[in-house]
Length: 411
Ligand SMILES: *[C@@H]1O[C@H](CO)[C@@H](O)[C@H](O)[C@H]1NC(C)=O
Ligand SMILES: *[C@@H]1O[C@H](CO)[C@@H](O)[C@H](O)[C@H]1NC(C)=O
Ligand SMILES: *[C@@H]1O[C@H](CO)[C@@H](O)[C@H](O)[C@H]1NC(C)=O
Ligand SMILES: *[C@@H]1O[C@H](CO)[C@@H](O)[C@H](O)[C@H]1NC(C)=O
Ligand SMILES: *[C@@H]1O[C@H](CO)[C@@H](O)[C@H](O)[C@H]1NC(C)=O
Ligand SMILES: *[C@@H]1O[C@H](CO)[C@@H](O)[C@H](O)[C@H]1NC(C)=O
Ligand SMILES: *[C@@H]1O[C@H](CO)[C@@H](O)[C@H](O)[C@H]1NC(C)=O
Ligand SMILES: *[C@@H]1O[C@H](CO)[C@@H](O)[C@H](O)[C@H]1NC(C)=O
Ligand SMILES: *[C@@H]1O[C@H](CO)[C@@H](O)[C@H](O)[C@H]1NC(C)=O
Image (cartoon, rainbow, N blue to C red; front, side):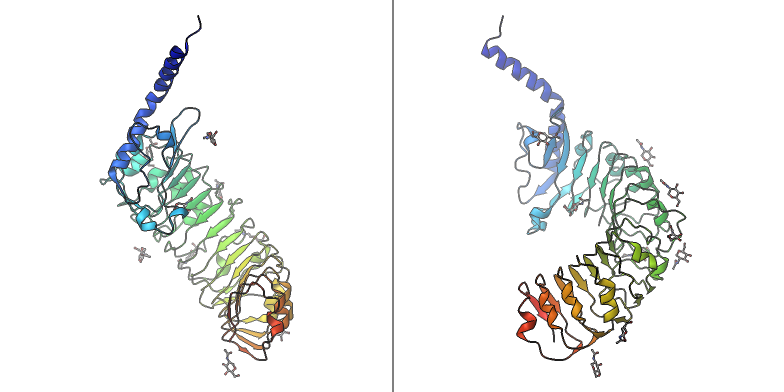
């Protein structure tokens, strides 16, 4: 006997409700989370009892099992106009920790959210064993939750920036995360963690490591062997390294594409190994107190360089030599050499660096005239040459080719 259409429909409903049954608990957990928070912009208005929670905004489920796999509730770029209004605030419901299938949890920048008081949250967080992505950026913790996070052995992305937790003494729990590729702890006070280079060196899967403004004191530790062969981005800006830049442990990481070392107190000669970092695209060494020394031709082989920021970093410079060092960097978009006691004249060859978008040579001791070849820089939007001793006349010829120019200061 063939079932009639009504029976078919009933069967279908039966199948659907049984399939949905185990997920009711997950839906209720989400509703409990919603009840606990204040949501000024109504970001959670689609979260309504009875509806299929997999269609709610920010919720992602498995197509196969229907379990909730992802919660994307970060105050991301779509809210940048209104980040404070967009913030969810209040206490995170304990029920959230029952979503054991969760792989992606993004609460980033909801600075008004807090975990239940009483110190259980770290333990509860570590029950979300399937997490691959965890973003708690900007959420405050009353104590450190770190060691427990070492239980989340599937983690690949971990963002704990600006959580202002109790000062951690130890980061060794990180070495229990064998898949970790992206770690951001910007703004955490790591002044008590002295062996951090050794610790991160034991996570060979790392591709991105951001430890800016962490009150780190020293980056001159000796490492017998570097395991971080996949590292592409290292951000150590805004710490307080008061030592020779030569002695930093990371110069041999030739896979690096982005290296940020601004706002430290590093000084002295750059090591020759910098010249071997051929993958380097961004090198930011700005605001290192004009105490660094660049040997001639050091950057000659860095053909992939797109951004070079040495603002207020060199104790002196010679414009001709700096240009010679960079003349093969045809991808250079941004060159900032402001405030480096650079002497000499602006070479005509500067017109060959046709990718330049920003050129800042201001605040040096440059003399002579501005070469008319500068007119070849048709992508240039910002040109700063002021506060030098340049002479001569600026003519129409200088500007005829500068078709993108928006900002200029040449006095
Ligand atoms: C579920 O299906 C949709 C549409 O078919 C697809 O875009 C999405 O990637 C799938 N999600 C998963 C987790 O497989
Ligand atoms: C974490 O969330 C913040 C805010 O949405 C975002 O800016 C940041 O890129 C996220 N971190 C990661 C690792 O995706
Ligand atoms: C989680 O990590 C803590 C601290 O390292 C440890 O004491 C605890 O046994 C771990 N818990 C589980 C369930 O693995
Ligand atoms: C970090 O902690 C150390 C030691 O407690 C303290 O001296 C330092 O001022 C702190 N750094 C910041 C940025 O608060
Ligand atoms: C990384 O290198 C150190 C030596 O600096 C070594 O002792 C350690 O076993 C290596 N760790 C991994 C995970 O490769
Ligand atoms: C930095 O670390 C090195 C190696 O561990 C040590 O020899 C040196 O004294 C430290 N410097 C400072 C300023 O702490
Ligand atoms: C860095 O490379 C140089 C030259 O290849 C080598 O002499 C030195 O031992 C290396 N240092 C580290 C820490 O790997
Ligand atoms: C800059 O360096 C070049 C090449 O080393 C040298 O010929 C020139 O005299 C130097 N310029 C000044 C102003 O010292
Ligand atoms: C410009 O030249 C004058 C006279 O030689 C000198 O006094 C002044 O310090 C120079 N200014 C700069 C910014 O180099």
